[in-house]
Amino acid sequence: MAATIIDGTRIAERMQTEIRQQVRELAEDGCALKLAAVLVGEPPASLVYARSQARQCEEMGIGYELVQLPANSDAAAIAGAIERLNADPGVTGIMLHMPLPPGVDAPSLQYRIDPYKDVEGVNPANIGLVFYGTPIIAPCTALAVVELVNETRMDLRGAHAVVVGQGAIVGRPVSVFLIQREATVTACHVATRNLAEQTRQADLLVVAVGKPGLITVEHVKPGAVVIDVGINRIKTVDADGRKISRTVGDVDFEAVREVAGAITPVPGGVGPVTVTMLLRNTVEAARKQRARSQ
Image 1 (spheres, helix red, strand yellow):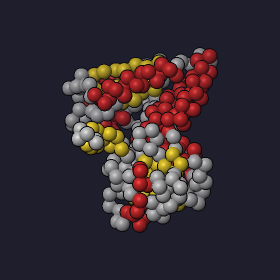
Image 2 (cartoon, rainbow, N blue to C red):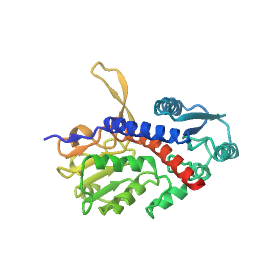
Image 3 (spheres, rainbow, N blue to C red):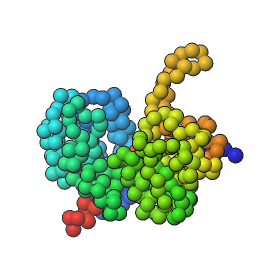
Image 4 (cartoon, rainbow, N blue to C red):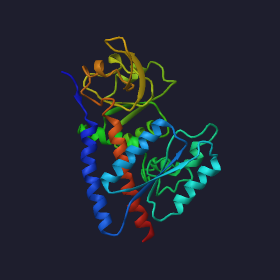
């Protein structure tokens, strides 16, 4: 029997209904929300994302400001924009669009975002507090993974989870979140030997590498829950011989869905939930700033 498809779009829509209500309640209590995004230059993908953010914020009742800086901005100029937003009491959430200009160190700038306004959860203070189970704002994608696992109603206590990819924003926080839920976690990465031997033991398999087709049928235990965080653009040829581009994950979806118990598609899985989690974090940031000021 083919796997259950974990519909991230539907989950995101349900979350958005809850967020609208929360934003209304905060507004009625005198707390207006505003998300400010810093964008350097005009990277096409980032501009598309910024327009999508603006539209979604409007739909949720959240104010939105896009701070665009010249493409040749240096670290000092970007840091200055962040500091101005930190000091603005009307701004309740800040995010920094990637990529940044060559030679500009992203982590050092993410560190400058007020942890209470850091809606992506990328400030090292927030990343570090994940390990203590007390982040002010947790990383969006890692939270999205947990939300998707919750949707399957899987009992994580005692389950064997394998996380492939140990990046600071996704893989490592996900591993910690699962440990905190009392799963037994195996962390795999580029140096892991015999990857399939590790992943075939997983009741829950989370993959966040950025390598299309990395996970095949031979990597998956029958009945496992598979969460594919990868987003990769590949070029293929259609039936008419035309070159086309499409988005795929790190998992061979069509093959793996025949053995898995549940699986996220790409697109339509982790992505929509991550984008909506940014809005949920914007609400959470406003609440915590308010509590801190009282």
